[in-house]
Length: 510
Image (cartoon, helix red, strand yellow):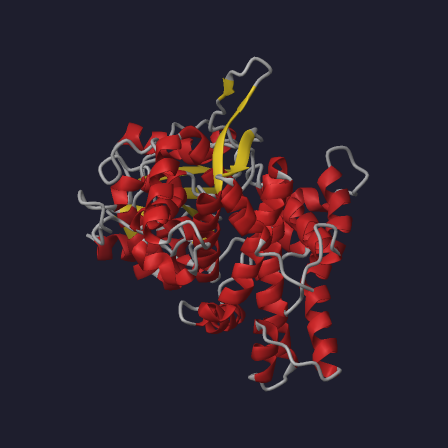
């Protein structure tokens, strides 16, 4: 049946191109279920902007399908709500599902076409991915553990001095690790020029992709309107944004090249990749773009994940207490955690996994573009469709994760408290197929050592009002393609004077 559908789709597409028939294929191959369409516009007005992952999950339940379909104005959208569907299409059929759609806003106007996130699937994408995998695979990330430990210790000092600015401290830590490991650059402060450029670039990405599909991508004819025309504010902004996008790719990389040329020896990914390249312009462009992609994408994901972790500790104090008992029993109270402790701390590992599952910072993947017609479970999937993996739906599947809204690290442990290797890994939080985050291994290590060190050193609790009443935050989030919790207040205090002294003792002597 599947072969027949593919053959029929191919045959009638050919006849349409020849102008012989004008067939829609609707009666030949069933589209996946989805909300009712209206004439001309189809589902365009139903495409969700806020919490889209929940809307798509709800439609999947309503229609009893792990695949949901919307269309309109020549656009086809397919959302995959199960691990079975994402594994079959993004992994087993990766050759035709790993392209990115062309965005007039992001590619042509803003100039973010160089990032791995938006690069079209082809040789250049493969070479960038290979470069990052070479330097940041699960074995090589051990080379960056010292810089991660230093950055986390500085994070603890920041939390000690300015606990209310925990998000700033998280971002500073992430920026330091990325810049040191990728470029050998030591970030001096939150006002560092590299941090400023990165934050501006991330703001641009959030603005560009965080409010759904840009109107100019739905109606490409709008690109021909002048920037002064009403409603073309984004086109005006794109001029400024393009300059920032260029700086993100070039500024730190040019710094490395200049330092190498002056005879300085650097221990970082950029110097390693340049040393092992043949020195062609193409290779340099690949390395520059690959590392720029990491620079552009790492800080937000780590920052937001740690923010969700803090919120979880506020809402689930019993989890924090249990974690601190494990740390005290295994490590003691006389030192901070190190990477070698990881295998001995199953509950901390479970907290890390549950942070990925509870609120993945990329709840709905960035769109993959289907490169040719395909058939899945008898449904016809047309070439050019935008295909999304719904990480939220997968990680909140009640059959796999009972009570999915609850923060429950125990779901990754056996009854006796030991690690459960049979529990489903929540790694879809890092993406799907060959578009999975190539920096996930260093992100994983960073998140783990930060979580373990914070729990070892501090007690996180709800803030209180002037009457001493606890202010319990909710789980609201800000809009954006990378999802952060809405601002909330909390108290972060050292567990004891001994813990405070331990934090202060980590200060590096200049």
